[in-house]
Length: 369
Image 1 (cartoon, rainbow, N blue to C red):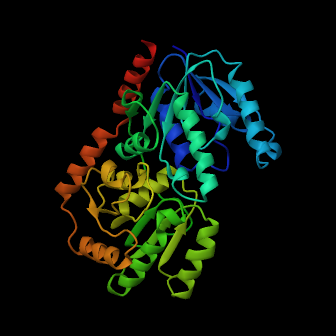
Image 2 (cartoon, rainbow, N blue to C red):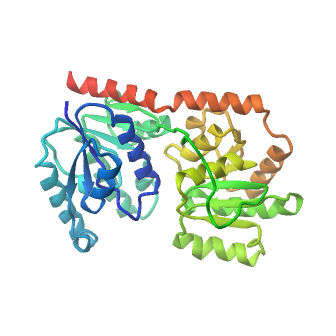
């Protein structure tokens, strides 16, 4: 079987985002399997050649001025994408980004589509949601198999689309710890800190965490360390709140950290907190728990499923006082080393690359029959 993984949605600007991170994990899982090929954006060709020198790599070259034009850009993107895949001889292709509208084309190969979440048809203006619904409907209808990254996403698919249960498979995101961690940034780390790692968008509910920290900062000596790329929401809403409430000397933002630095932050945090409102899976609480760090999270969407009810939860998700109480509770009565070890071992087993690869192989076997 010749298997093509579409990595063409990865570019230099989004390479550290969550979906590209998933795609890299997916490629790494299949990297030693026979018959694997990649489709990448032309601007990333040298990067992928260096990272995966043993793989056959095809490219797609876009004019990004045209690609980003409203309406016309989508038509142009489909044309270029269709032209690229038509030149590749493969039997199965995995579409691991449900955010790239260029993939909204018919293909001669059997398709496996990976769905992270369906927030694009839940949030936003009505007509935009309908447009997104049609896009997902096309992807799902024309796929041989659909992979949901969590039980929550699977339930959403069954509720919102007429998808046969036999067509949907739940395969979690693989989460593996790096071989080494270190801190080589110019800014030193505080001795004690609470940690948040996620995108800085409204649906991730960072403001609730900032307010909760403000509520208890007089009673603790910890800093709040935030890892995420600055967004207009951060600059417009969160940063002014931090400055106007005198929190600037206790809150630290890090951006674009190498993986070894990020995992160093995980391992040395007092508590990890994720107050997210929207999650298709939720990498970061799993990653923190693998480092045997106490984790606090909301009960929104996929989080209770992916974390398996093993962590510390608070609700309602936007109640900063409830979150402040939970942080105070966990700091004063942290889980035992034995409890943290047990959770880490459970996640290590359930979310290993080996386990997810075995599940993918079963899906591929079903397609071949």
